[in-house]
Image (cartoon, rainbow, N blue to C red; front, side, top):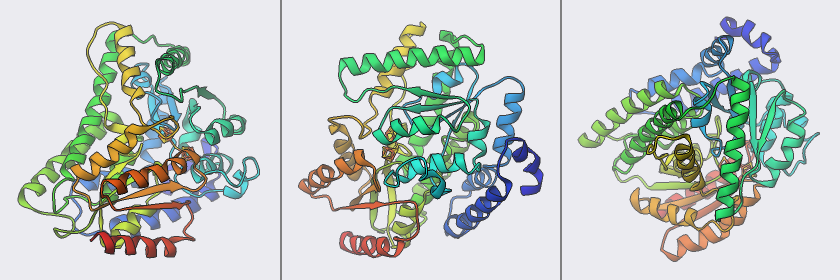
Length: 425
Ligand code: BJ8
């Protein structure tokens, strides 16, 4: 792939040497973690292809689209409505932030005790190794946690067009009004950038496209209730990660094909692991590509991840946007209603997240839950204690872990997770 796309990466201003090194590490990790798995569904082949071309063909597609006037919008948070971006014929891409890259440089502009996700955003930008950042016509930041909010002041100096969206912190009527006002502002900005007007008709189509994508992901989640589980947690996570990168309609079609195969597997009792393997729900911070550390440790310890209560998982895709109504105002209200449900830990209080984890443990017949926090992530760390207590009260085995993107604590994590699996199993 390297040779074929070299000119494109050069034109995007990437540091080719650093980028080559990154691709090498990524390729090796993918081989060891993903391709070495047994009994994978055949339909995962498409997602393997997307991964191998994630810095190649997909980036070329984005830049071909830009050449004919479409705008690429990068974002970091599931509060940024893809529907609005599609409605101006834009392309939405998640800027992954899931790897430890150029942290030494990042730590020169933001504090060391910042979460890895934020350091990764700054590191990739400073190290000029992310073709998605460089291909974005506008990057949307959001006022969620304090770390992100304040880091955008520095990140904004590194990229050409950063737009920061304010977000509510409480689920009140005032909070909803703020969210709507921010989405109205975002629409205006998108219209200005693209030169396109959002009409009710295009917005409705965009809502349908994104809903279809969510429905396909829901099918995939549903079939993980089977025992034996037809897909590994690692593969399911990968599909959820690629939700933010791929062309939405092509992605939906591919996820539906995978779901067809998995439903067939479930009917015939074919699993990726033997029946009766300990089942775990993971809850907490989002795992962006290529953050596969926790499910890798869990599954190599003899358990299977059956669900993720995370923005790269159920928190990101479990609500549909209502398609009812024919006016722009009604459709925008539907979008506000949908996104206002998201139970991110930046909200206070945030009781529905605990309820959702309890529900998932029950629905997916899990033997336990693992609360995953990225070190220095205050919102999720603050919620961890209450989450653990509430789960214990209803008899759910739970383990809370804090980690970063490095591999340094992998031995310690293995020991703790293996002991937990042994206990729940
Ligand atoms: S809606 S979870 S995607 S904000 S890990 S940067 S919270 S200190 S990512 Fe998130 Fe939107 Fe919420 Fe979801 Fe801050 Fe924590 Fe770091 Fe985090």
